[in-house]
Image (cartoon, rainbow, N blue to C red; front, side, top):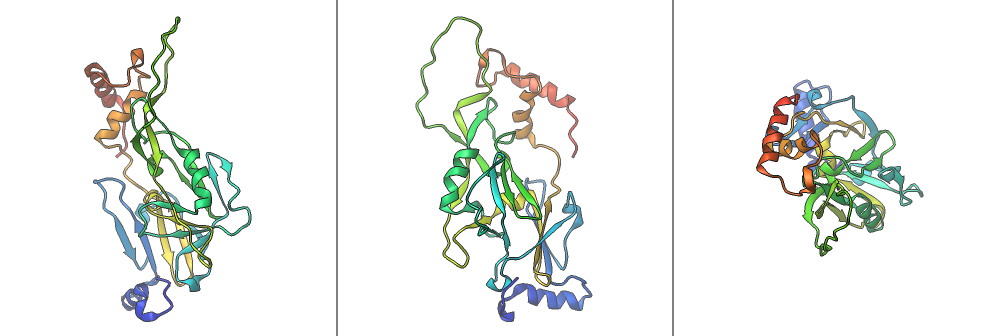
Length: 273
């Protein structure tokens, strides 16, 4: 959409057609990525779809539009509230890229971010609940990603320690030792002028946030996307144990009685669809 050559600029070609139809924003398009099978991803040309927004769009200018990429300034990155040093020199940039499936970052930032956000799963064995937050400050807006956006469940390859029996009451644990929420990140280094401190905001960001691209104003708008506010069947079974607390005896696997109690609890919850 920012290509300088008219023959290679798809937004220019579509914009000419939309302008002929009377569109007031022919050089603008919006991107919505579905988060479940009950939704449909959408790319809107000549404007954006307001029903996909949970809040007003926050607009920010593009860094060096002549480079032909949707790259915006990036002021800093925090891991669970702790500011990393990588962007202190003011040279960090973030590319908003619909063609990248992962969240990409320079090698320099990969280790502290990866180690800071990986964590053990709760007893129910999922990564859709609370956990460390990854915060990306782009000046006019702060992107916040949680375990649901950046991680997948992986087995813990470390050998399990043999339990030692101790006298006294049994200690209740809130996490599992055999499963971890593994950050799905990618390290990628770019030479100047794109790099060296270029982050790529791929699907994990674009699924949680609705983005709008305006080639004429050379700006990117971002806001939280309006997804269906109801968990699917699998998420219900994963989340409901939190309603009645940890299972008795510290069991890591549910019994048929646990499942029965969960289903009863599900009927009592009010989900907004």
